[in-house]
Amino acid sequence: MSEPATELTLDTPSLLAREEHEVAIVGRSPWYLAWRRLRRNWVALFSLGLFIVIVLACASAPLYAHHVAHTGPNTVHATDQIRVNGKLRAVIRGGAQYNPATDTFEIKKVDILGPTWWHAHGRFVLGSDNLGRDVAVRLLYGGMNSLKIGIGSAFICTLLAVILALLGGYFGGWGDWFVSRFFDIIWAFPVLLLAIALGTALSVNGFQHFGVRIEPGSLWIPTSVIAFILIPYVGRPIRGQILSLRQKEFIDAAIGQGAGPLRVMFSDLLPNVMSTILVFFTLIIAINILTEAGLSFLGAGVRLPNPSWGNLIASGQDQIQTAPWLALIPGIAIVLTVLSLNIFGDGLRDALDPRSKVRINR
Image 1 (spheres, rainbow, N blue to C red):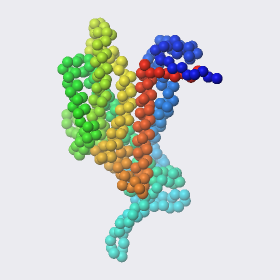
Image 2 (tube, rainbow, N blue to C red; image 1 turned 90 degrees about the vertical axis):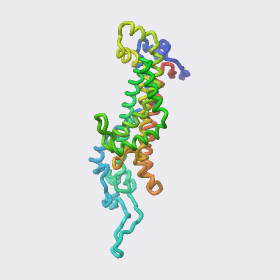
Image 3 (cartoon, rainbow, N blue to C red; image 1 turned 60 degrees about the vertical axis):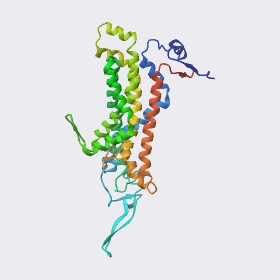
Image 4 (cartoon, rainbow, N blue to C red; image 1 turned 30 degrees about the vertical axis):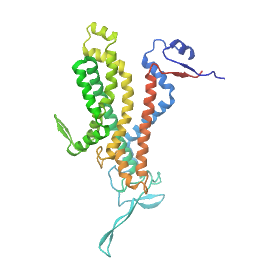
């Protein structure tokens, strides 16, 4: 019979070693101890695996489109027919039809192709939209665009936030005042409204200033907008930690030994806030994917005909009663992606927190 689980902290290495059959953990690095915590959290590891599967599936969109679906994300098949279970089926039935008797076009109800579930040899697995485009192909390409924007904007946002936090927290004075006011100005605006205003303006005219040229419709527009508006949400807490670390004795010792500002910032301060940065980076990806979906849904993000999960939901909302899969499938993809990232981010935070508890079953 197994004994009751014992809750220990990693600040008591000798007790933990005795619980794990004398496996020595004394002298291990904090990153190794964090990995020991994380690998016991099966829910977090499963969430990470789910996110990796989603990323790999979206990254394989060109292979799926070329070798399985035999179509592109914007290829229209409004007049095509495919064979489903041995029977020919029109991709789209109805719509505008010519009546020779009256010499006019009659508008009839459009009946689009539903999911074939591989009964059509991999074509239109998730059905078609109202233009005859393959929903599965557009879902994968839309996920690739959404993930590019989410991960890219998270990287840019975190990088700029860390640089500003290091500069403001280390130097203090006027430098910290300017960094704080910059954070406050962005913080004062509602996030989504500011993103819609910037996204709408840039999507019409693009950006052509300071030697940088971004064409309208480019993915760099939503990526840059989302990265910009979320800088204070990452920078403010990191700046607070750096301000606290700046007063520690080891920083004074490094300066006393002749270390310059760059060496202190990147060799002493940055490693001590790296765990916070990693957790923020994981969670900000999920927030950015949701923000991109909202912008694209409202027409201020990824512009049609380029697909993204947000504008796929917007395109399918008018047919939610007759063809619910058009809006539900990209919505489910967003939910799974964001949920997996949030759960893994929580697990990573618990693993990197030296005050968290570890439960060991003997």
